[in-house]
Image 1 (cartoon, rainbow, N blue to C red):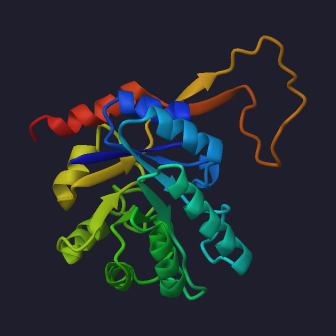
Image 2 (cartoon, rainbow, N blue to C red):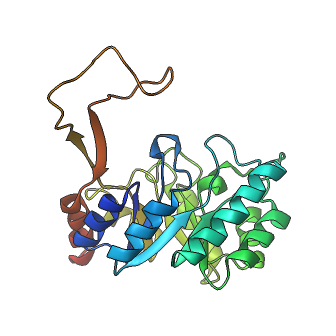
Length: 247
């Protein structure tokens, strides 16, 4: 059983390693589901990590229907991740009809090799998950991240189990979304998967003494300015320990 932790900082990556994770998926902007992290973040994380480092390549939040400019950004970000020592990249492109964009995905895979390639939860937005899985297998994708096309893995449990059976060892089906130390063993037992993905986060309070509460750095969606979430090593350890104990 391999545990992948989704993190949004180098500090979070180191906490995941300390908690016993096998690898991290390094992102920025988790509020929008994760976008490509900066070169500096990748470089610092790689320099300090001994475990696997996956880098998400996603130029913006929103849907997974990209224009040519966005695709060119993704090409450059894949080159950057390779140059900075990532072990793998995490991508996802769909057509307007909700199918896997085979042409663009194939191009990104070819550019990423010899790194491993994960297709992220864009998969959960495709209209036919069974056909989508076969498309990814044909393209040679190494793993697919999915919540079973529901808001969380517990809700998508039956679809995840069906995808795992359909995969038959041809691709890694990795559940992610709503996994906790309390439910993760149930998910694994019910699906037979060999890898799991989660964010194990805690709220951090700012050390600022002076706080101007009238100003916000974001737009209309206003998360707290003096509080944020980061990866919690103890939460990672709880998941790892839960998976190692007897059923």
